[in-house]
Length: 202
Image 1 (spheres, one colour):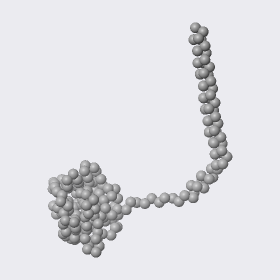
Image 2 (cartoon, one colour):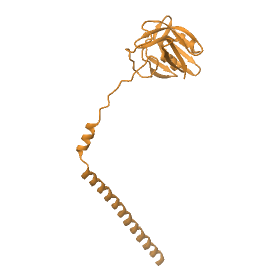
Image 3 (cartoon, one colour):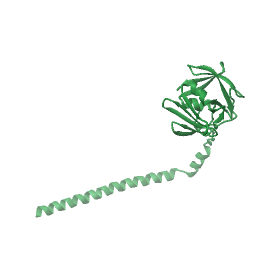
Image 4 (tube, helix red, strand yellow):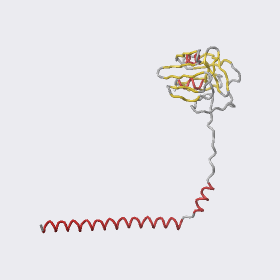
């Protein structure tokens, strides 16, 4: 019985010692924080913050630039951009396998191409639904759906904005060449020397 009481007393003493030691350590740590805070207050002037803020140049907001040959998938367009042509006409197009002239329509800073024509050049299929004026372009696992009068494009079932609305002409849907080509895995570039549109596989 006495051994048990001694053991209990020793355990209690140990517990009290540890509690006091932990408290002292915690108090020391808190004192350090207070000292750091006091040092900051003494050596820090609020005017410094205002001076730093006033010295920083404002970052101007820049509207994202949109190009006729790149589909940004953002709801932006710069209709004032210079295009290779000013009026609807035929331009040479080269996909690496096919080189031919195709009919293009300039509209609000974009070059519109027939979905059926671009599909043939890129080895894709084009299905036109005349009643709803919807067109489906498909190449392998890549798919693009557009509707005349809308700037919404469904690329692999994901809705993204086009820079201009698709349009129905000559029993076909015309859409920006950048959208059609890029959705089917191609980059559009312009060869000024040859006056030709070049389609490069991504």
